[in-house]
Length: 161
Image 1: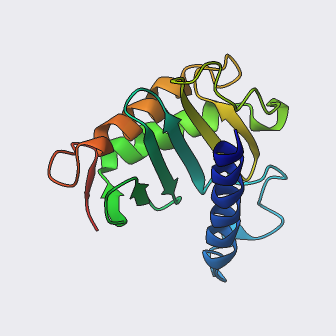
Image 2: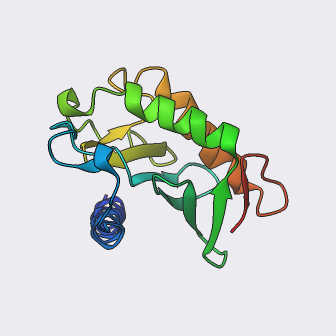
């Protein structure tokens, strides 16, 4: 429980720092305050997977431009870039979650070897990916975590950055 709370706090801090650091001025008229919605951005998305029989401890931070920072237990941190198809699928899935209406769910393990996979967005969360609030986006988030588990060369969704 204590370790899971530490992971959530660290993940939230990393997401906030990434969000603050990725803001830059834009000359694009569609980015002006008059044209922006009042909805917060869903990126950066932070997907965490902890526990399970294998003892996973994975943290993925995905930015709006498809850059993924991957931290996994026992492996060196790395970055990769989502393929155009994967970026489109993830962006579509993330935009379909009703972030403003999500309520943080039970983020602790139900039993000692429970695998807990959660997603956090500046717009809402954390919420477990299997929670009905996440809907059809849950399997897409899970697919990305599972795809990156095999390492750099095994990924079909992310190419080395």
